[in-house]
Picture 1: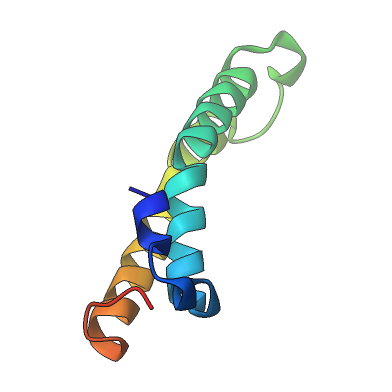
Picture 2 (picture 1 turned 45 degrees about the vertical axis):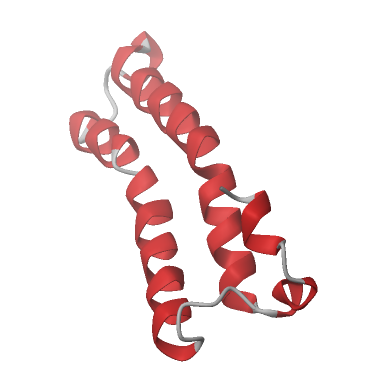
Amino acid sequence: MTPMMFDDPKALESPATVTLAISVATFPIVCLVALALSWLVFALPALAHFPYRYTWACGLTALPLINVSIGGLALAWISYFNDGFFS
């Protein structure tokens, strides 16, 4: 989906299109990092005395929601201000 956003040469000049493409492209990476960090906070014995470690683990698991919200806002921006065109 990401390469198809840039089929128009003027699409690189649109900050909303670039933001949406970065959000979509980095989503799998953010999911893996969030999963690894949440398990590290939860399972490492060195962090056993860490206050609120369960809350931190759940919060780190929700980290991909940032990508989803930024992508949704960029898509709304494209739909409203660019009439649905990526350029």
